[in-house]
Length: 250
Ligand SMILES: O=C(CO)COP(=O)(O)O
Image 1 (cartoon, rainbow, N blue to C red):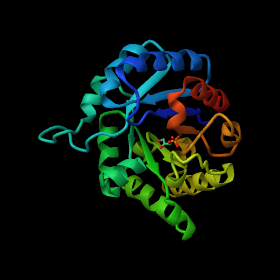
Image 2: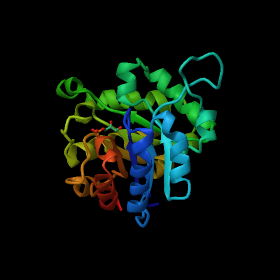
Image 3: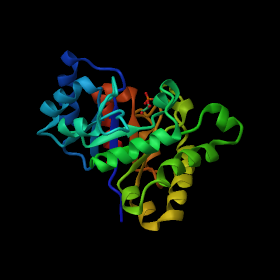
Image 4: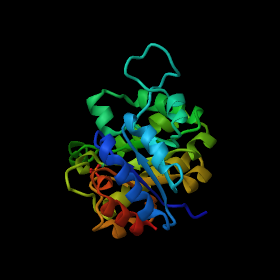
């Protein structure tokens, strides 16, 4: 089965109420004819705007994290049910910025993934090594440790419902994109590991690359086997850039 490409924008803590409608609308009209799934993961306060602006378009929307808890006394957290209420289809889990700045462990990332799945959200599970890991020859073991921590807690059907994003920490926001070969190699490690549990899941699961993805180079990246799209930070805040990356993915 050929996997359908998907491009996800991660707006991180960018965007404002006043500027976002124009950016969302411009992206939605730019990608509307492209045979690629597109989603924007925006800050929580912009979810209602996303629902109003993107609701009648082909672009889906989502959040950048969620609570692993269903509800209760968790000040500052947002539940999966709340995300569903605002029409989210996707949620990013385990982004390296959450792992490092918010101390999210592999166990927490696994719990968030399960909570997302139970709420019928599609989790975009991020894994990736630091530059120190890579230089020490530990990239593969770190990536697979992060992956196993999540996948080992899911059944086959749940695994198929996940998206995995390979985001080398050294490439995020640095302008240093992994080479297509480096990205494809890591995607190969991830898919082979999933195949050990289920060949069907490995064949159907979409694996995205993230880290300084720009229009230049996007075509080369997407032409590599096993790269099913991208998780885009900075370039998702510039409509022309994001639309050009979508064109390269289609
Ligand atoms: O972290 C990322 C997406 O989740 C990548 O960010 P940049 O595209 O800005 O490097």
